[in-house]
Length: 256
Image 1 (tube, rainbow, N blue to C red):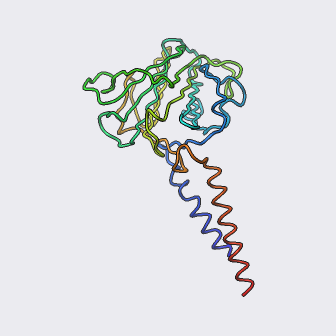
Image 2: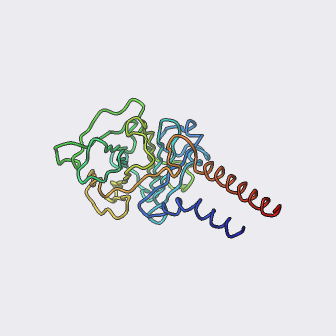
Image 3: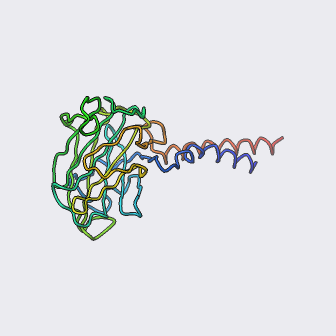
């Protein structure tokens, strides 16, 4: 029976192991995103706590992601930018609604530019004939979209040193409701003329340049249903079903 239980556990968690790749980010369901104070920075201790955490560049780039209801929420904390300059530093976040890895951007590809100190960013959509901005064209922001950034303060969870920070609230209706998206983000430190890209295999020092969607990574909702169930709940329910099933098998075996 012990062997059967181990096999069930391996089968249960094998989908999670398949996601453990360098160019994939797992997004979680949260029930606290409606409490976010969109001011461009980590505002209070627990604000972004119930979100997925990924760190890059030796822990100097922090990415927090979550979804709740009809929105995707993203915080990018650039600890490496210790000399933030408003109107010069920025972050770009891109999502491919179909994750079709096209060489040229199409109308399923959206990028959001969040400039430090601004209360409104810019939205770009693919399918532009112009080579400027990598075949993306500027479009009007969705009325429910939020892009705001600011210098961090003493409430930041990761560093007391002032640095740039970026918050995004992205309407799912804009990008489509999927369990897997193409995903890319970058930060630009204008004082140091330094860029960070994710996936980190992307190598470009050109400011404002958006790489081909074919090079983007993936943003994945492991439960396969972005708006419905959290990963932890799905695992808990499935594990309980497996344990109950094994227990019944054991009882039936002993009663024979």
